[in-house]
Length: 92
Image (cartoon, rainbow, N blue to C red; front, side):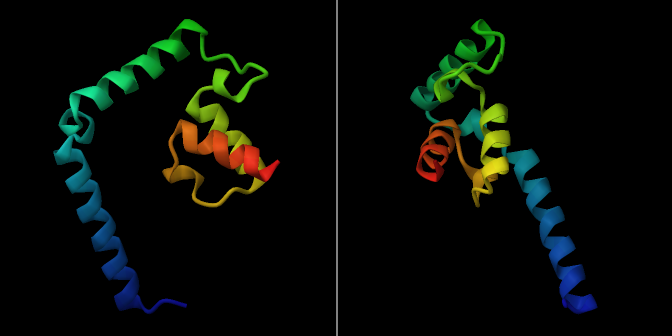
C-alpha cells in the first residue's frame, strides 16, 4: 500500500505529465512523413466507415484495442495499430 506522501507525489506527476502533453501537441511535432502515414491510415478507416471486418487490418485501432483487451494483452494502450495486430496474432 502506498503512503499518503507517495500518493500525492504520483498525483502531482500525473498532472505535470498531462499539462506537458497538452502543451506539446505531439502530432504537430512529428516528421512530415509520419504525419502523412497517420493521415493515410485515418482515411482508410473513414472510407470503410470504421466497420470491423474479418481481417485485423480492416479494423480501426479502437476495435483492435477491444480485441486485445479481451485476450488480456499487456501494454495494449501504448501500442499502435500494427503493434496491436502483431500482439493479437501472437496471442492466438
